Amino acid sequence: MFTNELKHSEPTRIVRRPRLSEEVSLALEGKIARGEIRPGQRLPAEKALAESFGVSRAVVREAVARLKADGRVETRQGAGAFVALAPKSLNFRFCQGDAPALVELREIFELRAMVESSIAELAARRRRPADVTTMQCFLLAMDDAVATGSDGSEADDDFHLAIAAAAHNSYAHRLLEFLGRHFSESRRLAWTMPGRHGVLPESAQSEHRRIYQAIAAGDAAGARRHAHEHVRCAARRVAVELADDLISERRGDVR
Amino acid sequence: MFTNELKHSEPTRIVRRPRLSEEVSLALEGKIARGEIRPGQRLPAEKALAESFGVSRAVVREAVARLKADGRVETRQGAGAFVALAPKSLNFRFCQGDAPALVELREIFELRAMVESSIAELAARRRRPADVTTMQCFLLAMDDAVATGSDGSEADDDFHLAIAAAAHNSYAHRLLEFLGRHFSESRRLAWTMPGRHGVLPESAQSEHRRIYQAIAAGDAAGARRHAHEHVRCAARRVAVELADDLISERRGDVR
DNA sequence: CGCGATCCGGTTGTCTGACAACTTGGCGGC
DNA sequence: GCCGCCAAGTTGTCAGACAACCGGATCGCG
Image (tube, rainbow over the protein chains, first blue to last red):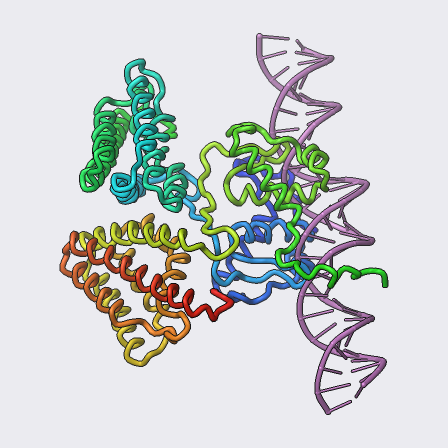
């Protein structure tokens, strides 16, 4: 095809050249979103798409495979590819691209407070002895981390997932697991910033203990309150750190 | 024509033959989940995978493309495919495959109650005049649907999304939008079952009105309570309908 | 005429082989 | 020791082919 002519003519090439399959899948996504192809309707054949986009069929297949993985289209061998009526799954993307901005951080913490407090409440109602034991296990692991000054981020993640497990709702568990990838990033942000050596502050640990005790005691309202408060405090810790950074402004990477 | 000999020789062929690429992607997914390939580590080369699975490279590429779309792996041309460290997006799948079982329905409603009540509470704190107007608009549309006996499911979806918009948290809004695909299915289930003609029951509409009034009045606790109750009632309506179906057992498709 | 069985074009799924674009590590020159 | 270049390995893309399958058209028979 006519592409790929500018091999070395662009010295300031920082971002990688976009993959053809990405362009095609984005284009198809757009067609679907704009309603040019309605749900239930058939997409053009792969061969036709390949010709119209000026690419090979392999590229089209890869693009369609992505839409299929996203649940936006379904394919039937011999019949064609159809825009899904009611997607069984969908990609939920956080901050596509870069790190979240400050205003987004507030919203993430807010969402985290909503979800985690609801799950904690449910856990207080449903927990069984085994669940309590598991939670206690990770709580002790974090105690250890505080005492020795080692990294307790993993135990922190596990602790919050153990709460979700105690709620005995597989959908809620999967949701938190899913959100957790992003929550844990914000969680870690609270105590892995420079100068903190990744040490879990004792204040956070005492919050954990309060949540644990409320769930163990079956105190639903208390569990909700403490979980909500925990997230609020975490947000405050992050905000303080960020403010310090902004003042001393000696940093380049916020990763 | 010696082909197509077993076209009708297999009468019990209900499930389609599993696609090779699905098997491979599932196998790789398992390897990653079990920790056989850790985050940040490189996957075997496509050629090697193709040989070990006994398939062509095209199949492997399709399988990897799916994992890539799910955000579980990242590929770098010339370097290889790597298990993602912190996926920016992840596919959250409901009931992979068939319709949700009964026990799953309970969990879905439970999750829906958690999320919608939290969002309603936030909406009561944050709503602005314009938000209230929007919500009222959809409320009236549903009134219309009840009066004329027409389909009000779209207005129902819009009403719940308007609440999320009033919460002024883009992440929460996107989450509900995302979950909504599945919630709305369960929501519609409550009043599109046979014999109901897809008519919105007035009881549900009065619940909507209570939620609306609480949010408009800025009553956070009330909004949470009413939203929670609304979902509980919806679950009960679905349960009653399902029970009726089970007793009269005159149906084949539950779609 | 009505109604199956059959056929046929079109479409997706898979295979094969090849080359381009790119990364990485090592080797050699300085 | 350090820098640049090269080569092997890997992913991205292309082309062509065949198998499996679907849906409608066609044909044959009662």
